[in-house]
Length: 309
Ligand SMILES: [Zn+2]
Image 1 (cartoon, rainbow, N blue to C red):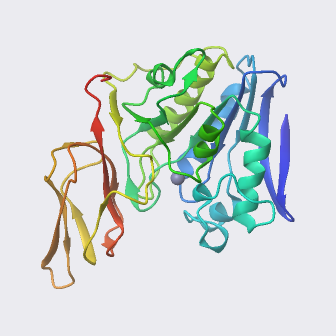
Image 2: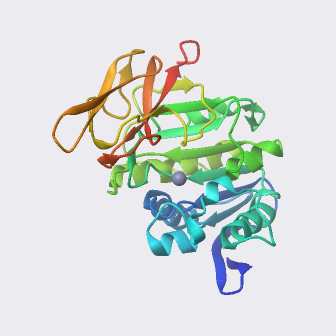
Image 3: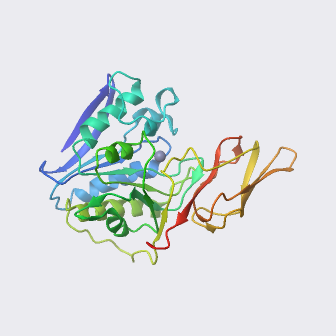
């Protein structure tokens, strides 16, 4: 069935629901950020797949979680508000706070698993990955086991999560949660959308919410588990200079602490700053959009978990 949530006058959130209303209940969000179309398209693809898949629980898919931001094609929505910093929202606040409140109360509070589909957006690049709450369980087993069932080559185990995200609200309620990232740079790749759709279906399978679905192609040869950080993309290696950024590594590369990951050049072509890794680990986010200003994030590097890898 399809349904509609009214977040504010003239602002509706359209969802699709599969199953009989029983548990386990899973919520899938796309489009929390308006320049991350991978999650939107993947959510529609998941809905198409579920239309022909036996669902044992209740799966609710909201492909376009942030209509104002999606309409503008920008990361942030109404009033330059970042929806992923406003959960659990406020019914008396601005449009974005009302959207957060509506999603939190109608789709996160009642769910047993939250999956939030993001991507690197226009300004960044990220390797395909599944981030998840390291201390949470799904189907009686560590959530890491469920993440391993997805086709993502990178898995990011978060011991804590910064406040305000959809997954922060789920985490505060003690629920298991996962988010996906990939791609970015303002372009879409079919392979990323395929990974998302397969990843969601695998998590639904582990949660006991849907029957297994077979996909073409082999599973990833190796999965790298990284730890550290709370998933806050507003912090990391920061630029100290204005200019254009030239990267010397790629998202997903393994780097050593102090290694050069790029440089900022001024308008006279002179190197204004050498940007270095602040730790050893995997480059999980890397600036793509070329013109940078001081204080913006150049990269996020997460340590590889030798025990879990
Ligand atoms: Zn996002």
